[in-house]
Amino acid sequence: MKIAILSSKNQWFLSFAKRLSKKLECELFTEEDELLAKNFDILFILSYHKILSKKTLEQNKHNIVIHSSNLPKGKGFAPLFHQILEGKNEIVFTLFEADERADNGNFYMKERLFLSGLELHDELRKKQAKLISKMVLSFVKNIAKLKPKKQSGKESFYKKRSPKDSELDINKSIKEQFNLLRICSNKDFPAFFYKDGKKFILKIYDSATGGGIH
Image 1 (cartoon, helix red, strand yellow):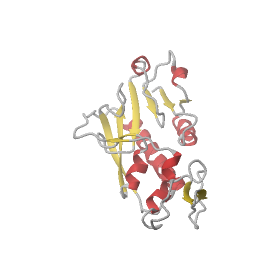
Image 2: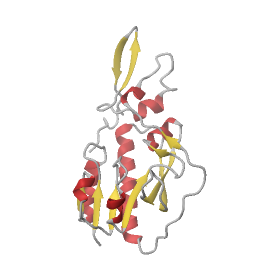
Image 3: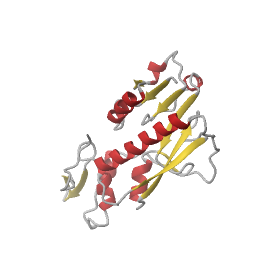
Image 4: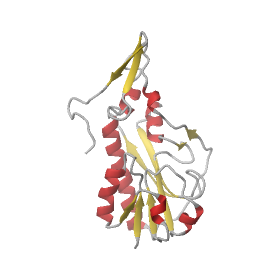
């Protein structure tokens, strides 16, 4: 079976994609242009935030995306983080066939990620990557038995998040804003607040682990 992974070089998942490509003994690409004139039985599109062209999609038998929401609910950007902000500790991941619309294709499987409610950004990413990798391997192993199902229900969309969304309200308690603190990246988009017109940056660590993606 000819397999490949497409994962953006500027996205958090790339280090995990490299490990996954070694496990699958497959090629790893970071740009759609690199797929020109290449054909695969399965192309896994993981943490790649662009919709592939019809031409690219038609080159492969399967174009598989894993989205961290119970599709068709939670289409769009940063679904895991948005749901954590909503207070959820059980997150459904959907593995589906990509088409020319965002998060729209038929799905093959859904899995649940269970959280304690205490994980910080880096641990959340590790758990997210672990479940994605598990679903990828399961799809490869069981592809002959899996049947596509049409998404059903009312769809919803999450907006794109940016560093400005990491701003804390100094008039609210830490407890009230703990889920926001959990999804802030100390490196890329740390929590911050303003006091008397001056900006202050706040970083958060788990004293037991010290954080960090490895």
